[in-house]
Image (cartoon, rainbow over all chains, first blue to last red; front, side, top):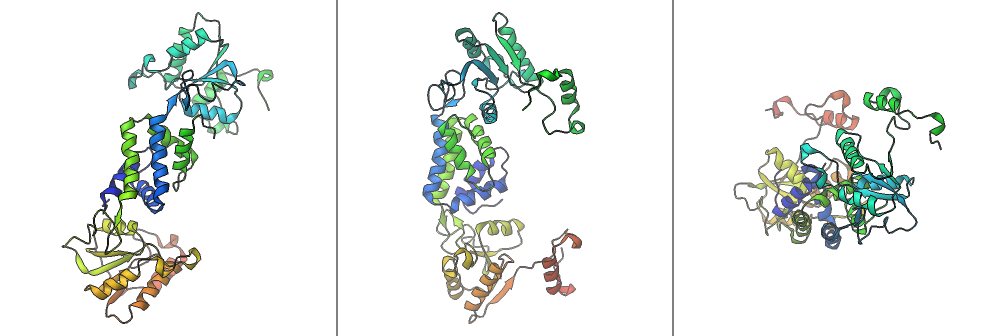
Length: 205
Length: 205
């Protein structure tokens, strides 16, 4: 791509660094911004820059936050004895969108993955143990990826909590609602048969 | 979508204003930037902001430029007597990418479209007339959209140039190379039959 302006070229290259955005899309975005009022573009670039420089992480659950404690942790109406363990803040948002969970979260910041150099110390595991030890938590609900790394992480944390009387659960995995059996991958189908639930326990709505 | 931080929410909303980017993609981009070093994000936001505030337009062809004259207009090796009339700078880049044109450009900034409130005065038409009058231009090549608006614009400009002895051409339209006749839309096929070219004139490579 030949640019007649270095300013355009720089902006396109910056956009093209974002995931899922190629040079052509980047150019389309840049040309769109070029047509906007300068004040609009300033608002855009400042929102991005402020987001990164002023963001804080909740001292309790490590969710993103504007305050010391995030909106969820400081919400007194939520059930403080239930904590859902997730990998990242996107998972928090996905679960919040279901409106089915009114407990608190603990964002690990990833899962244990030795191949990627991510050990237990790179994650917010120590603070989770501390939370269990200090706060009145009755149940930890694990909602990590159903991968070897996710399972390893769940196993590692549960081992560390062996001495604590606490209910440990995991969100159920299986054939998606509306999913056709014949199109479900073998692993999912196999697991959902192994983890079958007595009919009277199935939550139906 | 429920955000636990207003900073994140602002940044997502800003990204979601860009064309083709919805809230989910915007969130993915924001979370990606959140994981980058702060200096990286500063470079990103400054490239966008500088691009809009420092951009200039070529005094001759209205292409984007860092100088008074753009890189193409100040290139002495290009044929100054051939000018290709295009709608926007993306068209300039598309034609430059073919490496088949070594003349200059004139960027109109759009086409005449009364329904959108775009009249001849909103476009860089007057400066094109002036260029034809003052410079030694022998040929104007119209490369506007093959729409009613594009055709109207071409007609309007050619009318204004009636008194000038200048060659007026338009890029050829028709079935794309590699395109199958049966899948070509009727209008394109009809036009490409009407505008058929004697075989000995067909440029082949």
